Amino acid sequence: MTALLDRPRPTPEDLLLLSRDHRYELVNGRLVEKSMAATSSAVVAEVLAHLNNFVRDHQAGLVLAADQGYQCFPDEPNKVRKPDISFIARDRITPALAEGHIRIAPDLVVEVLSPTDLVREVSRRIRDYLRVAVRLLWVIDPEARLVQVYRPGRRGVILPETDELDGEEVLPGFRVPVHILFRPLALLQPETTAPAASS
Picture (tube, one colour):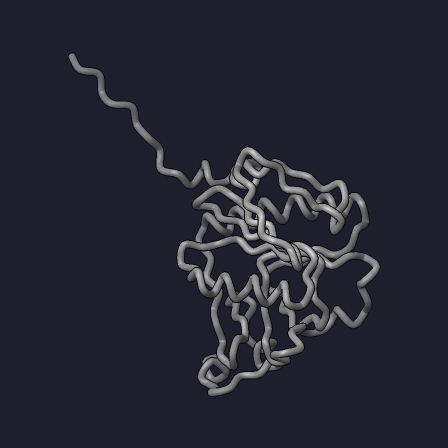
């Protein structure tokens, strides 16, 4: 693994040889590790559970986790992105998807922000996905407790905790209150102790 990381120009094929314990994307010829805090990981798990349940019950397609790479960027054929969660509609699934990096854009991408994420890198990810016509993109911010929703050719929309996340035409009928996605964070917050009563 170390030898692969030290290569000056790693390839998408090299990326497949790396341990799945480490999440690397291939961007501009460099391996970029995606780190995730416990808060982000907990929110990913919550979103994944809701999506999996809905997609399974409706036989809507395939939900994929964070270790799945996408090599679907025509302008940068060696770029590989690994969204935190992705969904591909049933009518687009073929046996060719089973091996290696997926060569078609997903219908839905979910990215959950971590405290270490740089604004410019998040912006690049959003731009990359929208350029290949990902139909729906959710960028979830656990710290701000909101969801940014993006669609090709339209302005982004910010959903606060009081709003509802909608699968729209990508996942018709899927709805979940935004605040539900942040439910696991209550367990990670420091407990507050009541002040001692004065005598």
